Amino acid sequence: MSDVATARELAPGGARARAEAVEAPIKVERAEVFMLRLPLIRAFRTAYGPSSTVKRAIVVRLEDSDGVVGWGEAPISERPLYGIDTPEGTWSALTDLLVPMVVDESFERPGDAVRSWSAILGQHYAKVALESAIWAIASTRLDTPLATLWGGVRAEVPVGESYAIYDTIETLLREVGARTAEGFARVKLKIAPGWDVAAVRAVQEEFPDLPVSVDANCGYDQVAGPWQELDELGLIMIEQPLAGDALVEMARLQSSLRTPLCLDESASTLNTTRTALQLDAGRIVNIKPPRLGGLLSSMSVHDLCVEHDVPVWCGGMLETGIGRAFNLAIAALPGFTMHADMSPARMFYERDLVEPTFDVSPNGHIPVPTRAGNGFPVIEARVNDCAIRRWAYDRGT
Ligand code: OSB
Ligand code: MG
Image 1 (cartoon, rainbow, N blue to C red):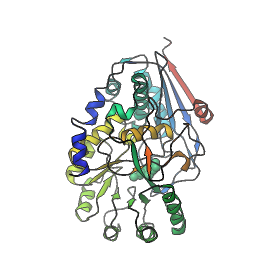
Image 2 (image 1 turned 60 degrees about the vertical axis):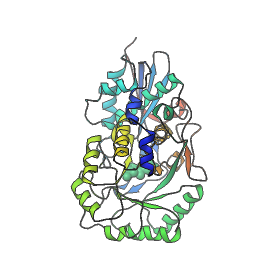
Image 3 (image 1 turned 45 degrees about the vertical axis):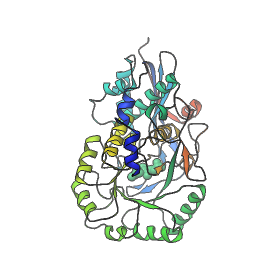
């Protein structure tokens, strides 16, 4: 039986329905939103170009009427290249719109809170931050870790490393060697025109036993891409070769290749993912809660993929340990049968916002947090140190 068929047996009725039924009465009494300035150790270059050297993540702190606190993260990118959200737009969606919708309201379940904003279009990063904070409160109130609440089936998540585009192949090989020695078991190479087949070949020659995949971040068009050459290299997958909305073109490309295509930017919503799978525009799905605007919405995509025998894995958005804890919990669900992108924050940031944070084991796994609430303890003083803007909201109750 395939892993995915097993996954179907392990999640009867689906993860979303199970999570939606979780009861944890919550009345949010106070909210704080922090815009953080997080210097990156180095820019992360992809087909979109080099990332900024400073990231402005936004974190939300909610406190309920019993003083229980939950944190959530919007791992927003500085510029809208991967997705359409921006730091200022996310800030405004949280402070003008979403946070005032939940403060002082009583919810029987986290799912009810999510339903209260489900008619609002877009603002996926803002929504995931708010939903995460609510789940953290629910998890603390129930004294149960999130992975357990959601029906997780694994205690640790296999992780690979995502390698940026470097100036030279030598630098890439040095990086792969160092990370592999730390345990990372799958290599994902960011590719772009001019940095593709030769980079893959060099890694495969030097590390013949390592499974390799590539991520093109929408950087090619169908005609000009190196697809046939890449198809000969035995890659685990080719992630997002074409533009996110080019579903028909992706399906045409998939039909010409043996290598599975993986949907990242294309899997922007549940319905779009369903359309893509029906078109056979991809055969693997990368699930990122921020891209999908929530944890429940990520579970819906997980359930859809399990139903279609499509393997999924958890992607990353350079989250701090706050966001990574939610990713690890969701990656414990049965359908997540492939390596996650889950480098520890030390790869990007001088200091994480959580302590203790996590790291990869020598055999390439990261333990799923067993702590109730936020999976890793949030160090409020660090959040405050990094904050360049703060906003607090309560109705004076
Ligand atoms: O396509 O997976 C991507 C980072 C920013 C934008 C897009 C992507 C990425 C990553 C990050 O690959 C990987 C990680 O968070 O570990
Ligand atoms: Mg990707």
